Image 1 (tube, rainbow, N blue to C red):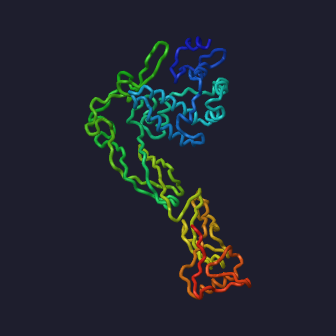
Image 2 (cartoon, one colour):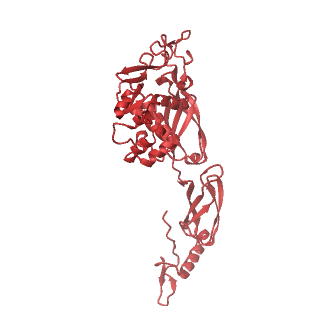
Length: 423
């Protein structure tokens, strides 16, 4: 019965491996079969939209949008005219973004998963909540958000590869302290610039593009295949809606040319290793992946910093103060008495900036230095200390336990050392 109802409707369109209808008003027993048809896909296993976009299930909305942006450009049928699978991949990417970009649909998808047998039943029971995604229109909407020309001219013209905002992937290295504090950099980047001769019109000056007679300027043509009607990019104007008969001799009808530009980039404080920044540059954009170089002095864990602090034996035993280098300036550290190696001293709010109001902490790992060049008086003092030290585990070089339980000197002058703590 369902099949008969579908084929009695006037307008429908292939949609993935199922059927998508143009008309939303046709009903059978009170049910909108336009939306029902969208659910009857010939694939028995529902797609995992996170895998389609190549993102994690905890991905943010901006990460989902970025993934769609790259994949839609890669698989658009007009860019892959000789790849028959491109249209299907483009359709899947569009479906995935249309679902995951909508909070309500995303929650539904997260609740039922891609293999849950109840997912179809749930979708069937809420047919009025489903939407019919048009991949071409969705594509123009998203690329319009990124500043594409197709958005500014409306949805009546087709997609053209030159209209897409071009993106450049760059990797840069940033010193640890610059990444922690934030910095500004100037990069030399090859960017697309508007052709000065035709001012981006792609036509030779003094001439203009003429409206395509085949699509009447819409950029699309409609093809009838039996009961189905399909809309595709116009084969004559390639989706432009107009035809340039005399292209610009300077840019060869592209409207742009590539040249080196100096781009100023602001690195935000606290950026992490391999984090990617999106930098809009006119009608283009740069995806900047930052490699944070290791520091010999700092170690980072989240927003906290860790550094080694070397102190003398006398400071460790008696306590004292040490002036050390910090990320935000010099720090005076109070060393408590009876400090041991690898004790951690915390300096509150001296770490990486979390936001404009708070910072992480800076921890100093204590390393006790052993003296190397001792005077005779220092040697005698340490020897006397060793004689009375009840915490010695084992023996001390140069000292021996007598029958009376006392220590005496084996040599008149021996250099006594304390085994240094291994870093």
